[in-house]
Image 1 (tube, rainbow, N blue to C red):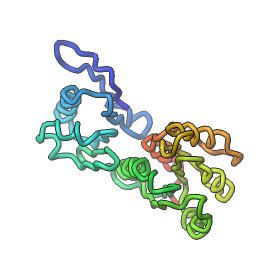
Image 2: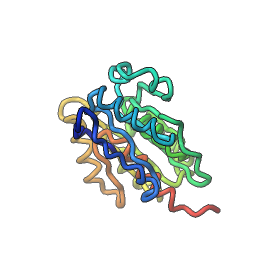
Image 3: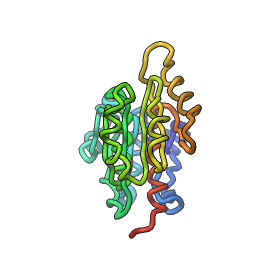
Image 4: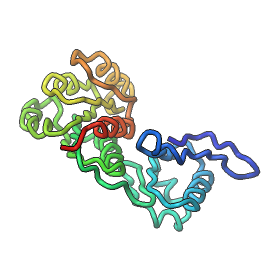
Length: 231
């Protein structure tokens, strides 16, 4: 992911964009926008548009920053304000094999879940979203479990106590990627409680992402899906 360090040289951005990353690991570098000045971001977009067009994902692109960009670029983007993501030059072809279930504990986790599903869409990975099925109503998990388990990979997104991770971890044989969110009151500490709960889970083999990192979860799911042999 192309990060902040602008590396100005003669008034221009020394972006050093990793154009060959897709050749090495199967997915391209994306642009993390949260820490970038809009003028520097615009220079990056100008550089990318001068190259042979290929799909680019932008994450943490706030509406405020998006509106400051040149319409010549934004008119070419598929922008989603809720997840703060944008596609430039479209998305990659859909994979012929693989499915990801994206599960959220509550509706407060949906912005992170949408970052996850938008990244999966960008990478061409089929997915199904199961929102608001947290452990406060266990019947919701029970009613969706068969459908959730049809996927090859499960991404679970939760804040507060994140108890759903241990519950689902004991109900599915599939690879499970957990994403703590910054949702919750007081002692939830902006996602620290959810993160520690996931790291302490008694369900074996759970992979844990950083707080609110839906992008990272989607990329991890993509790596797993790419190893599945077509049937």
